[in-house]
Amino acid sequence: MYNTILTELENGTLIITINRPDKMNALNRDVVGDLGKALDEVYSNPEIRSAIITGSGEKAFVAGADISEFTSIGPDGGEAIAKRGRELVFDKIENCPKPIIAAVNGFSLGGGCELAMACHFRIASSNAKFGQPEVNLGLIPGYGGTQRLTRLVGKGRAMEMLLTADMIGADDAKAAGLVNHVVAPAYLLAKAKEILQKIHTKSPLPVAAIIACVNECADGDHHGFDKEIKRFGQCFATEDMKEGTSAFLEKRKPVFKGK
Image (cartoon, rainbow, N blue to C red; front, top):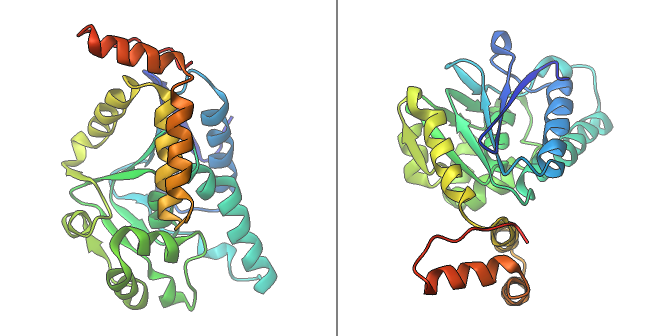
């Protein structure tokens, strides 16, 4: 089904592995297309409750874009590459109503760092390295890197990383707010699965609503408070809200049905 990625559904979590280890899992047109298809499956398949995106091997999550695709295009072609990536993959990840975690193993540079940042949050192996080196190529990030990095680490840190192209290690990335957890490489996927299994015990309806609300805040939506109130009210129309409150009062674990 896919040429450049591997997928495995395990306990409701779709594990998506970018599989170009000989190219450090670099993003090219085929990878973007395959990721787009896999994300469509995440959206449409009710058996999928969440997803993990990672890279094959321990050296790289995604070491950047495949620069060989850039050499013969002009401004319109550059815009088209960025627009296609955002529509097929990056915005689709960020706006997915199901949680998507980046399990970052090794280098996460350029488009790879942007891919990780599009996920709802990130877990890094202790050998992970993050950076946006596009300025070294006479370019800027094109998949949302200038925007998402600034939101995650703040203007000053983002400006320095983008302008110097310096990489930062996993511990510095955690301190900056770029990643949530740093673990030994052998435990990377296990940690991501552990967190998602905890989220799977919640109702998928408020999970989706929380993702939407947090994204609106990150986007600077001035109507975020009003939209939160609206979604809060909508929860009261669900069977899961009635089950959750009843279970709490009856001192038992709720059994959510996603209705």
